[in-house]
Length: 402
Image (cartoon, rainbow, N blue to C red; front, side, top):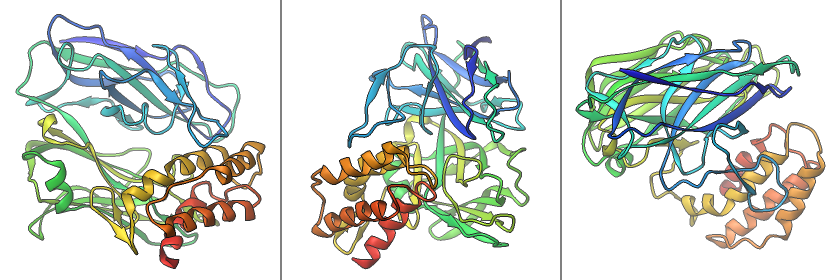
């Protein structure tokens, strides 16, 4: 077994609560493929490190990323230099990367099941991106960090290639002073029939919420019958997450259903908590390590509120997936440039630029909805209270009004 360490250079930590920082690295390409079988964190500044994700980048990827500030309807892209950190979103490289390893607070590292490994090399992947979530609630401008991750790999290939499958929900609100709030997500039988080419075998799984999370489960159903808990955190702790490992892997068949349930307590909050990246926002995700990697066509099975991205959803004549493709640039522009309760110039310019854009929506009512969202933004003084709250509520209520 050999190892290689991917490490950030000494990098200033921005004076804001939440920062996602990425850097691209090249794996030293061996003469033949190897399997990554474990990862361990290299922690420099424990004051700010919340979690790290390791992505592998597809060979077709152009090393560019979306700019974090722009005022035109289309994202600006800039080149990425290998080994040079850059600010990124929740994904290191949109539509061009998949998660292969995760470290979070309370974990010492990750070992992959003896039957499988992550393929790197000639037929595998040679470029990777390491993403850090820095948490700086004190807004200190004196922090630096040069953390990293060590990859342990072997040329003795195991039987299967391994992957990571993500489930959960990306659209929910948690009202203040609630002792019990439940958020659910389903990776339906339709979704698994669509995504799974053959059975997959889950070897490990873990839950992910933030500080309002109190318990979470991922349940496995077949033909409408409950089979088992894949995860069952009766008491969930954001600072010490638990990984469920399975020496005997769990078989998931095309047509099975995975149900994720997150429970929250917001008694300590005086304002509504939305879904989002910040630790003061919330998430409801589950991650499953599985093999064989090639059997899963899409590495995420995510709900948006009650809607599923994998199913042909239509509401009052408007196709959901087409709607999202049309409204996506506006969503990205506003959530990037319009932050909590503050009327920044770039937010105003974003809204005005969006007014000038001529959308070609899927249905006439989508055009009306788009106009309503722009108007609502202007009524709020070109700012977004709760960041993504405007768009999410504008979307749902716009559909309901029809």
